[in-house]
Image (cartoon, rainbow, N blue to C red; front, side):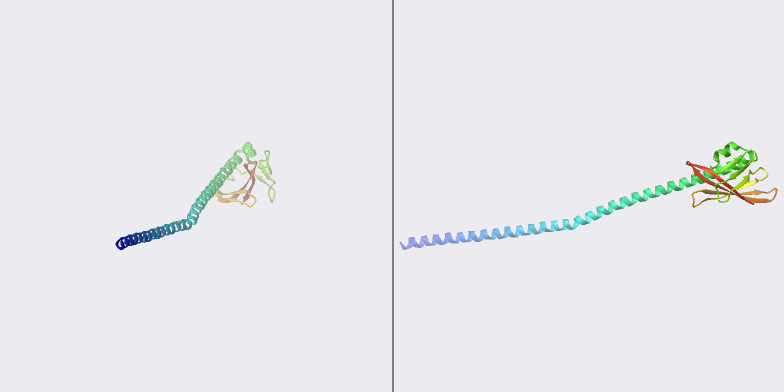
Length: 204
């Protein structure tokens, strides 16, 4: 009887030990799982933190690129506009130089039709006496046509734009036969989109 009781006690003790070991093992597994979970959460937090840090930097880089692109576009547009303006001014200058030379020739040939076509509204032409009347100038005056005897070698000197928007084209006239020289300054103004002669001033 005692032997049976002893055997039963040993059996119960073994069962209890195994149960305790099983509980300890379960607790260890749970602790390991908790540690793994915490490590994963920490890694996720680190990744999210890095992404949050990188997001503003990426946004700044994108904004900087877009700003640079706008700046380059504006710069190109400004450059293109500037070049077009320069080209237009150069074309106007050459056009007025050519027109002035034609006016010289028209005076010698008394080509009244051409002179009428290029005069401003403030300029009158007296066909009978072959002279200009310049009225829309600071000092109104009359100027006889320049003749073959007056004109020798014609040299273009300068082109100058005034504050009022008119353009002065200057020439030097050299007559080697008479050993004389003088200057002629044409003033051109725009009327209805076309350049017209508004003055021809001689300085002898």
